[in-house]
Image 1 (cartoon, rainbow, N blue to C red):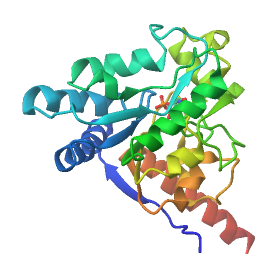
Image 2: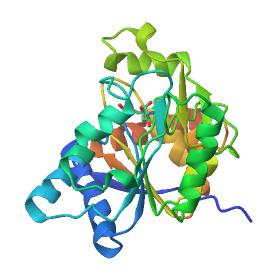
Image 3: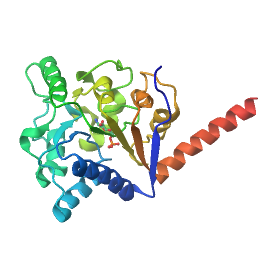
Image 4: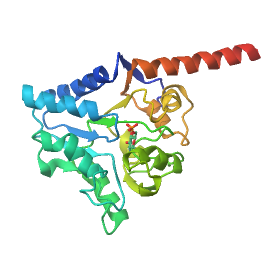
Length: 266
Ligand code: GLP
């Protein structure tokens, strides 16, 4: 039988507390399994978590040297040193500030000559590393995870994806607020890659920039559908959502107004 249940939620008072809790889970894994394989995410949400990991490395000697890292996704067609490339992001926020081994850092190459071959190589690399022990995710306002956009086939592995207008508009905030500058394509782990991780954590806080209350609500309580990629997480046996109190409250309000509406219809 397919496993479907509401994912576990871990609520923090605010963004800083949420970031610390998530960082502590990664640190605990690095302590118990120094050579863990960890999947990492970009976007504004995990920045606080990375800052806490860097602090733990500097002040407490948290060791990254034996771990292997696979990032979720990368834009197609922007240079690695472009300030908005995910290569640049990861080095700025984490890898340049800790003792990760460069040979164990993997980010899809969005400038590969043969993008299909790059996707296959990346997927195989994850398998060869023994699979991902812990995958970190953010969530887009349209329910995307990585760059798996609405409609993505749940059986896909790492693949080339066309970014939706909504995602390009949401991410224009990182590109001088100019949606034209946002690439139209990306490489992303697929739903199948993400679901093969042994454990998954999703971070989401309430942000004025992109309203993702709906996406978080549906990921937790909605019907599982390819139209909202994050809903597939309900089928994973070990997933936790790290939320700040503010988004938790918005999700609860949404549930309350839905049951009020169905009550008034009865
Ligand atoms: C991008 C990334 C996703 C990320 C999402 C949310 O589109 N590809 O992995 O989850 O942004 O971004 P933010 O955390 O800034 O809301």
